[in-house]
Length: 148
Image 1 (cartoon, rainbow, N blue to C red):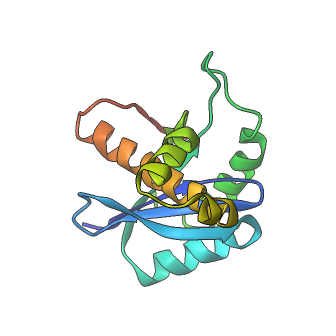
Image 2: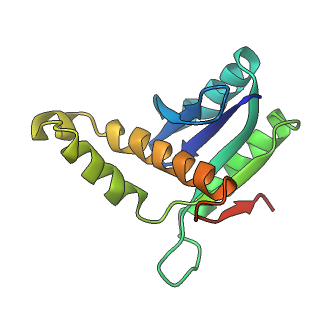
C-alpha cells in the first residue's frame, strides 16, 4: 500500500497531511507556501510511494462551490499533468478550519502560538480532510468526490 496525501489549498499557504503506508491514521506534513506546493508534492511523490492525492473541496452551505475553486482547479490541472499516474480526488472541506481551530485549542496550544503559527490551522485542516476521506472510504460517513 502507498500513502495517501491530502492538501488544504490556500492562496498563500497550503496545509499537507499524509497517511502512513498502512493508511490507518493521518498525520501532518507541514504547511508550504502555495507557490512551492507543486515542487514539494512532486518531490514527495518521488521519494515516497503515494497511492492517491486528496484535495480539499471548498463548498458553501448551499452546496455551491466556493470562489476559491478558481485557484484550486488550475493547481489540480498542473498536478495531474506532472503526476499523471497518481489519482486525485476532492474531499468536502466544509468546517475544517473551524474544526482545526477547536482541535488546536483543545490540545492546549496557547493563544500566542496560535496567533504566531498561522499555518498550524492549515496543517490540521489537511489532517481533518484526510481523516474524512479515510472515514468515507471505509464506509464511516463522509462523501468524497472523484476528480472531474
